[in-house]
Image (cartoon, rainbow, N blue to C red; front, side, top):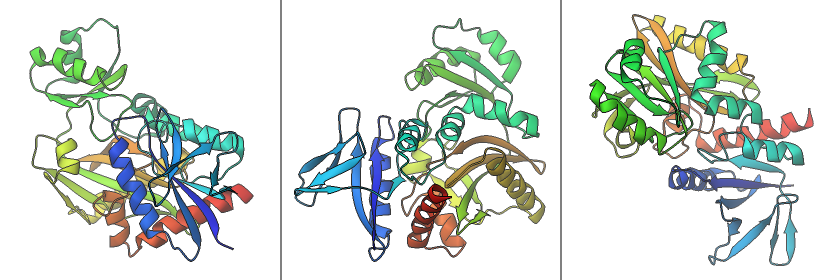
Length: 328
């Protein structure tokens, strides 16, 4: 019997439209012989399914079900395609865990931890995972530009602590520009992280659970036409994304070992994509995404293709893993 799959997309953050694109690709490629798919739009105002005629059908939140043409649809599994809150920060995961409804991404604690860049890097530090020197600010804190520069140096990156797709990020070359960059980051989050600039090779590494095994996908080398891998570079073609990355076997093995270690240490499930800067053969971790982009142009699907994994198999395996974990 075919499984009913809810593909959640949208969300409450600036990544809303990117998430809609990811969700549409998942719906397009899931095997229709195995799955009945329902696209579910999540917004801060409403949760609903839009049918072929454009009519909206609200989700019943008490059990996350759907009344469609007089029939109650209950879902066997949720495919999470929400980037940002509430799909990547643990809120939806906790909701589904309470309902005992299988979902494809990691558990709520891992989602909350990895979505918070400051907490993630702090949690990984005892395991020897190297990262950039950082300085933390919360909204309302006094800003001491001299102290910041003394700790992280120039140039440096100012980032929103809990945001994706490079929203709210700036590369700062002069101390006088720090206040403007900090203000921009606070527009995305009330916590920010300021990091030292790491001058090296940037690679993106997909680690997934595929057919029961943790698998490191072929890595992607990031070469931005802009000053760094910002929104334009990610989504408007102003970068080169070379898969597999043009790095040495030594570098590749070292990054793969660390990326897999992080996945295991954090007790991850589902998809992940982590970013590293390689300096003198040493990988420095920047961040980890638990619901990475899933369009044909996105990095993780390109890596899966390089590994010989079709989108149908990639997405289908994710659902099978979620169903298996729920029954174990």
